[in-house]
Length: 233
Image (cartoon, rainbow, N blue to C red; front, side):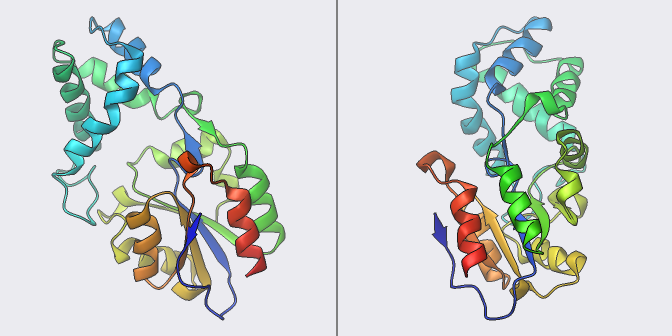
């Protein structure tokens, strides 16, 4: 776990979290893609999808200016995901997916049963709220996120949810962190942001005047240590 500059002397009042890779994960992504597309006549291997998905995601993401929301740059989040699904099928030498296949996959990932909350999340939320801190999420996500957070039961812990698709600004832009501070009615120095991306979360938050913590789950980090650091600083 990496941390930005030591927390400011001003009393900490809120903790913001990234979502995907920090609070939740999608352990059956390949299986879901293969299952849904299979019903529409497109045969993909689930393990292959799991391995290739990030490559295709990053390929499309390169077309988005840094700090802008990828999903709404052309005004249509579902269209962005449609391009990703189509590109994935192209790599597998499969037919182009129909709009019905794209729509079904888009809705599938708005459902709670497509996702899994990391086991340390709810205990960490409990510790932070018991310490009198407000909780928030600040995430580069499309409009489905708030529905998903509600379905997962996480929204009841959150004072605010800042989603990049709301106004077109995404991490690491300071504008999304400014909106977080405004919605919490706090100064940036009163907030710490926790996430898994060294630029979007760690450096982006720090550049906007927040403290930040990097939790790299692939390296064995967890929220327990992050919460220990927050509560003892």
